[in-house]
Length: 161
Image 1: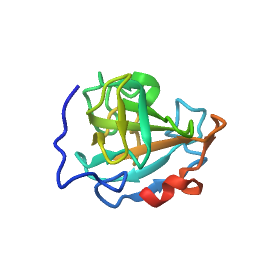
Image 2: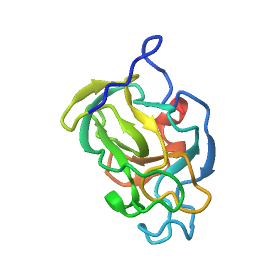
Image 3: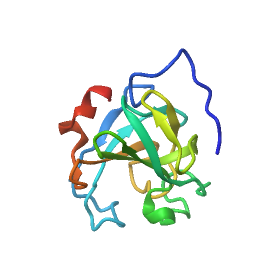
């Protein structure tokens, strides 16, 4: 567990920097070797160390993986944590929706922690499966109220990107 300093109060965006979308939800790609060739999140290209924060809401941290250390395309930890690398899975306590933040360089929360929107969950990086051209980015998966993977760009959380 690593504390990430809060700067200037709560963040109102998931990413502390605008990230170009490099791969959309549902895209087929040869680099998605752990998901049958389909990208189940949305990939945002951002510099390593960009703060990733929770959108508004009351959140519970369901799962944390912070054992990946290698970064960059072709790293030997490509399969670690099913390709997610360092990742955090959270659930909105009011709606049941979930978000998974993957390929983080640092994690700032603990499993079981209850927190609120605007708090940092980690720093972006390139751990796990970042083969090919994906490089440094945040992979953000969204699970709707029914628990199904869906496109975050078609969700209420789009306004926080």
